[in-house]
Image (cartoon, rainbow, N blue to C red; front, side, top):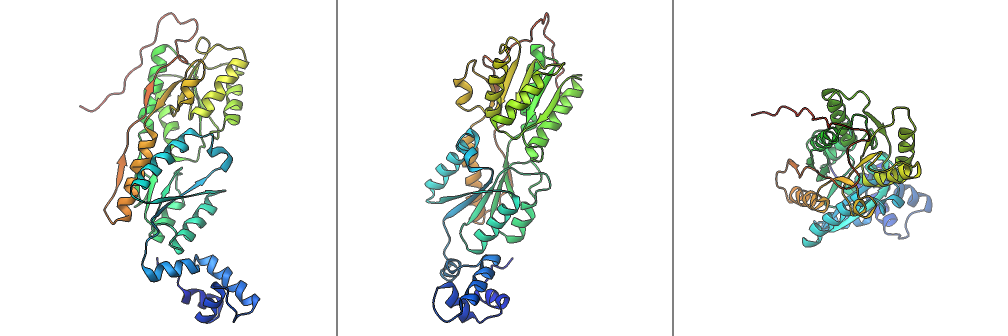
Amino acid sequence: MKRPTIADVARRAGVSKGAVSYALNGQPGVSETTRQRILAVAAEIGFSRSSAARALSGATSDAIGLALCRPARTLGIEPFFMELISGVEAELSARSYALTLQVVADQDAEIAVYRRWWGERRVDGVLVCDLRTDDRRVPVLEELGLPAVVIGGPGGTGRLASVWSDDAAALVETMEYLVALGHRRIARVGGLPELLHTSIRTEAFTEVRRRLDLPDAVTVSSDYTGEEGARATRRLLSSPARPTAVIYDNDVMAIAGLSVAQEMGLAVPGDLSIVAWDDSPLCRLVHPPLTALGRDIPAYGAHAARQLLAVVGGSPVGGFQDETAHLTPRGSTASPPGLTEPIQPQRRQRDA
C-alpha cells in the first residue's frame, strides 16, 4: 500500500500542493477554514510535515512501535508486560533503536495508531500483543506492509512473523500435576475469552477434563485484574461443589485469589491449592509462596524484538516457538483434604 503524499492531501482537500505546504508549515497564504480542512485530511490519511521530510531524506525512524490496548494504570501492576518490555528494550538499545509505546482504548484506536505510524514513518515496525481470534489487526498490517511480529500464536497471524509459546502443553502439565496430588474438583480463572491464548488454554483444559474424567472441573472468565480475579474466586469458593484447586491465568489474579481464600477462612494449601501463571517475583513474596508456571519473559521480549529487526532488515522470518512455561511447585499446592490415596493421571500418548 502506497504511503500518502502531499499530492494525495491536495487532491482530497480540493486545493493546490502549495496550499497544503502553507497549511502544514503554519505559513500565511490560506484561510483558517482551508488550513483546518487540510490538516483534517492530512490527519485522516496519516500525512504530516515530518512524514514528508522523512520521505524526502529516505531515512528510517530507528524506532519500534508497541501499542497496548489496556488502561495505562494497570501496566504498572502487570509483571508480565513490565518484564516483556524490559526484554524488548534490552535488545533494541543494543541496536540503537528506540521503543515507541502507546496505550490505546480499543482495537479501532490501535489500528488507527498503526495507520498513523505507517503514514508518518514514525516507526520502522511494530510488535503486536494480545492476539485475538480472527484478529482484525493482522490483515490491516498486511495491507499496509508495515513490518510486524506478533507475540502470540500459533496460528492466526496470517503472513506476519510470530513468536509464541505452547500454552496448551503448560496447561496440561499443570492439570496432570494437580490430579496426581488427588484433586478432582479443579477450577480455572481464565483471562479475556476473546484472546487466542486464552482460547488455547481453555481448549486444553476441556480436553484434559474429558480425558481424565473430571466432571466438576470448570473454567470461568475474568480480565486479568486483581478485582475481577477476587470476584471470580469468591463465586467459586461459595459454590456447593467448591473446588479444591484453582489455576489462575496470571499472577495478579492468583494473589487476589489467595487473599480471598484466607479471608473466607480457608487454609492454603490445606483446603485449597493455588497455581499461578507467570512466575513473577510476587509469587515468591506472598505466604505461602505460589506454585507457578514460569518462563524467561524478558528473553521472550528480546526474541520478539530480534525477530522484528530481522523483518525490518528484509530477512525472511516465520514463526518462532519460544520456551514452554514450566511448573515450579511451592507451598500453595498439596493433596486435597481427606485424600487417602493419590490418583495417578493417564498420560497422553505421544508419537514414537
